[in-house]
Length: 383
Image 1 (cartoon, rainbow, N blue to C red):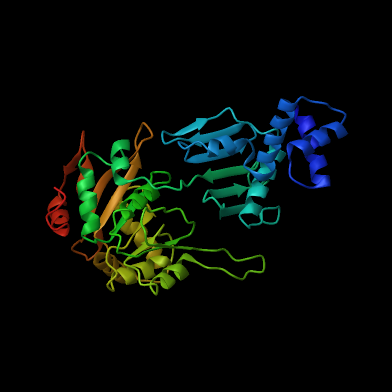
Image 2 (image 1 turned 120 degrees about the horizontal axis):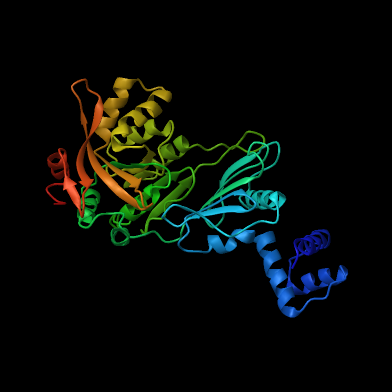
């Protein structure tokens, strides 16, 4: 069926209203003087329904369980990530206007505005998919659309070992980490699997514990019977109703958390998280963007000083609050994996630094300088 004919059917349905059922699609085709067979009418109805109430041509990609990200940069440039790096697909939109329509409709489904006055949006769709879109002319040439798929079921730690994210035997260290109720951060770049690993680790928490999650966008899916999920919210068009991650951390502390979790530490909430971890909330954790485990103290320093805490006080808080950093990378083959495990210590100047305790070797974790300290923290477990 031609693009022109589909556009005609689309316009007829828009004017007359109603769902694109097969009967209504057939009526729209008759109105345009076209008679098609049953199979063609059903195909047109399915295509229009996915465009009007689904994800359009992206629907098969989003339904693929191996896909983690779908990226659109032009009508004929649709990319996916299946865990091994970006791949160009054969999926295409009819034109740039079709990409814009889909982005605006998805934004509306998420309860957000996307137009020339507000040309970008960052939101969560009802099924948990993370939506980001930018309209022209801010995005040159075509609407840019990014969809991060959140699967309803978290991977288990055993599955991450099987997938090669955790080295053989490395799960013993991670299980000991959770049993010891050490506070830790998962660090790494974009798309390295920080959320996936953290969800799996939270699935190891005892069923009698209460986990409270504070996130900008609800992406963590721990397999646990007692999880409370809090999500931030932008201001409305009148500038009211803003709920920040900092607000969520403060509210979470009043909800009797056994484990306080911040999905991604990237702002002033770092002060409240560190304060909480220093006042009896053991086993807290979160993720942070960093290119290396050794860069985590500098990242926290930048966030803390931007929020008004002086450098010395910030390092004192970090030293008392956090014990371990788990750092993830994507290797040359695109595989996500734990590259290093670091412990934190203070240098002679009183500043926090990380010390490598384990690194990914040829077949398993290899012990480094900080292993003795890590084993002490784990109570002798994890070897």
